[in-house]
Image 1: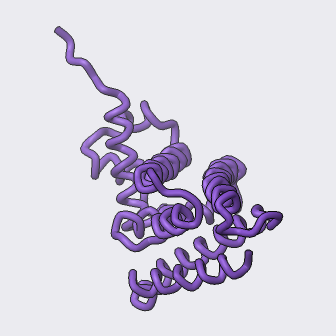
Image 2: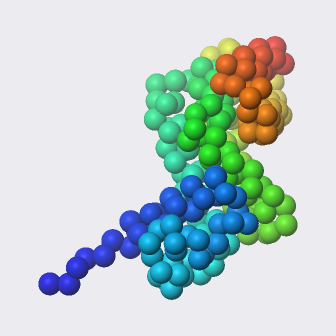
Length: 198
């Protein structure tokens, strides 16, 4: 009987290796040849599943985004309004090794997205999903009178997301300063300002 091959599992294994390489050696040194060496698969085998390095990077960013959204879904169960926004915000920040690595990959991807329509579309989708999540909980907060009626919520969502991205970038670029504790202190301040801005 012929062996059953799980192609999805193979793709995911390759993407996991690419994610690890992007986080540790960067996009320039993440070559198909090096991916083949680290995975034990041949170059031809990898190119059977992915046409080129660009596709591999796109699939990898999609994979880490799906993982982070799954984490958020689980953590947000039973939470509403500003409590949910605080939880989502904390999950966005690079306060664990896993999330630091995800941020390292994202920051490289943003550089590519600045000059690639395909990567820009992928990044825009992720930003749109985050905005939608934040807006949903802002609407709940407004309905529960945590935010005054009549306040325009879209600028609040944009402001929060911009601050989180800025804090995350600083935490990656200045890791010895932006420890987990300092990130949480900064998030406390953001939330206070965010509530005050309503």
